[in-house]
Image 1 (spheres, one colour):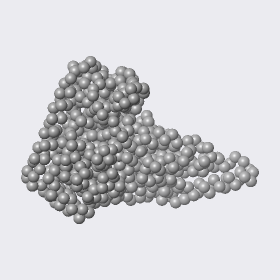
Image 2 (cartoon, one colour; image 1 turned 135 degrees about the vertical axis):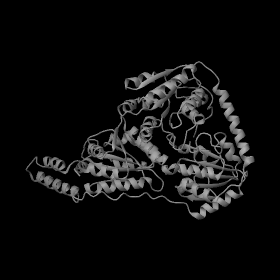
Image 3 (spheres, one colour; image 1 turned 180 degrees about the vertical axis):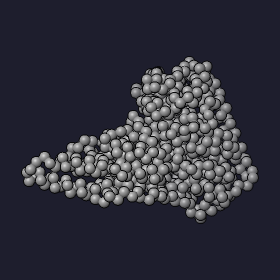
Image 4 (cartoon, one colour; image 1 turned 90 degrees about the vertical axis):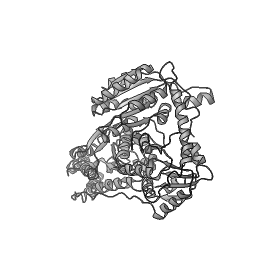
Amino acid sequence: MAHGGDRVAEVLRSHGVQHLFTLCGGHISPILTGAKARGIRVVDLRDEATAVFAADATARLTGIPGVAAVTAGPGLTNALTALRNAQLAQSPLVLLSGAAPTALRGRGALQDIDQIATARPHVKRVYAVTRVRDLAPAVNEAMALSRSGVPGPVFVECPVDLLYPEATVREWYGAASAKGRSLADRAIALYLRRHVERMFEGSEDTTTPLTAAAVVRVPDPGAVRHAARILRRAERPVLLVGSQAMTLASEAPRVADAVGALGLPVYLSGMARGLLGREHPLQLRHQRRAALKEADCVILAGAPADFRLDYGKHIGRDAIVIAANRSRREARLNRRPALTAEADAGLFLRQLAGISTPEPGRYAPWFSRLKERDAEREAEIEKQAGVDGEFVNPLRLCREIERVAGEESVLVADGGDFVATASYTVRPRGPLGWLDPGVFGTLGVGAGFAVGARLCRPTAEVWVLLGDGAAGWSLAEFDSLTRHGLPVIAVVGNDAGWTQIAREQVKLLKDDVGTVLARTDYHEVVRGFGAEGILVKHTAELRPALERARQIAREGRPVLVNVWLDRTDFREGSISM
């Protein structure tokens, strides 16, 4: 191996990494060239956060840790929001960062900051590598650790003088130590020679470490049997499946089979959206709060009782709660369950389905009540979608996307009001067919998630649903989408404002300050980056525009549809705290 970057890349290859996301920098160039030489596709983007978001998406869709490489200093700090988002979404990824030369720390070197302290709060572990021979073991451990237990990001700092060829690094330090003859100069030269020897000590061993395996905790059989006994006594059970049940991405079809076999009324959230397809008879979509209030047994499978469940208050006080979660803390967050299964939630559901067979018709009255509510809400939404205004009704736009998007589509959600509306009305086509930021609620994930999704699912349509506020983060990446030949379909719900915020702000504070945007020509902006842009102002233009966008994507070009929206009160009172 010619340099440290080769060592890093060889470990990535051994773990099955196919894409390395980056924004280039001199500190990390050897990692990029090493990856390319080993057949790993290097995907260069316009922002470090986008690179981490793309790595996050590939991790969620494949189960293999996503990998991003950023340069030192601002390269890392630019990535922090995306890193924190991955941590809270429990996405397994590895962030590789360049760093100042090991001998120049704290001496004013370019982009030299305390990166370990900066990254530590946002990752499972930090690795500060100081010798060439430790590069491969550190990356190998990081890849396994990111998937073990509660998944999450891991940070590996790779100083620049560990990555370049040994001869080049020795030349750098030799030149730095040959500038004087004084006693102090000779002492510095001696120090640097010894420092270099320590850096490269043992580096003649170029063996790639054996691929470290992730540690996944399996359910305790006793806990599974206990859960089955509780279910046998239940008359009004509800199953809520969250993102963490999808952590073992390759097992998603078997988790879907288990949910079907359990025969319980089920609500899907986060990455679990689409798990059962579009029309599964067990799945419910509306009035979840009422169902949880009336249930006598609630199974939280990879779904914590956080703000999305009003800190557990959505669940009736007398309900028996079963929580399956890799994190004991999250399993017991805000609502103490009667049974805690500290294990992978997907595996828990599969094992529970293996020993729990519902009696035919046992829950029929309960299902009937829940289905009736669902139908009533669907009728209300359909009625609201039929209301015409000056521009396009947001519900009508969502209904049209639902009708037009292909059966192999992946839906990426990035926005506030428009995207939350879409989450009620646009149905993911199948398992792992929906990507949203997760519990952090981060805006700006759209382009990165789209890049990752398109690379993981090259034959699928990738639809990016963008609020006009969130669109601001993704526009520059249409350059990246064009350069890398990634034909995604972006739809901007353009209502000229940060509407989710404005609705409550104006009502409570009587002021729209900071929430007003313009009807910007986003479709013209992306044309400047080489993509195609389409403007829609009226309902009659909507279906033809979406069909045209699909055709443009099939031809291999990214496209953005800029849809002017009317404002509605569909999500009145939706602010979260």
